[in-house]
Image (tube, rainbow over all chains, first blue to last red; front, side):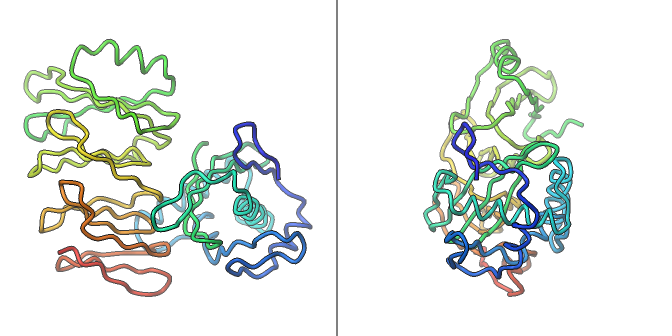
Length: 141
Length: 170
């Protein structure tokens, strides 16, 4: 993982073959990746939200489609490569203590990072409870 | 459209450059409030006007990463408060343009709702908080990501990870 000049975690599109291997690993809370000994994030179904597939409240649907558009503008789409890229980015962020922006009273952590795609980047705010991803917000584009 | 509350209306200005923002603010010879605990790459100024004379009355300035359409401004009429959402914080501003208190947000705000008991529900993507006009957190609960919600009979019904939860707004 590259560290940007401002100290935030930055990541460009990874090697598709390596990230697809990571993508096939199961999520688990606090579990270490046997390959690189990094904590594996528990992402669950949350990537659907990021890629515009949210259902439920109007707020969620609007946020979800906005994030999918933002990712599309930087060249990350809802496919195997895009999903693997996001998983890889989130794993790097979770394992980077420099990404921590704020810790809430309830222990949840706000992390800030820069996600780079083929056509640019977006600032990412991700909220975590341990290794479990709660939600994501994208800024820019 | 001018949305008039208590004979005032607010016009919003957004600047991408700090220089333009500063020049604009310096040119306003009115009472100003700069919200210091706000950060972002967009510079906002809410200008309060008299609804008849259109005279400028006050300016509230802050920074945010959010687009104008994603920000909230609630008039809490009975408590004479403005609740301003900067994206990362909620600022509770009284009618003398003093910040009474600030509420930090970690996840995006879903919305604000004044309850029957005249308290404020702050619903974020991962939490619900009931706040009094004095800044006391009367009730607070964290959840996993909130998929859906509704309010009925002063109860907030939440759909979280396939489970139904309730949050009493009394």
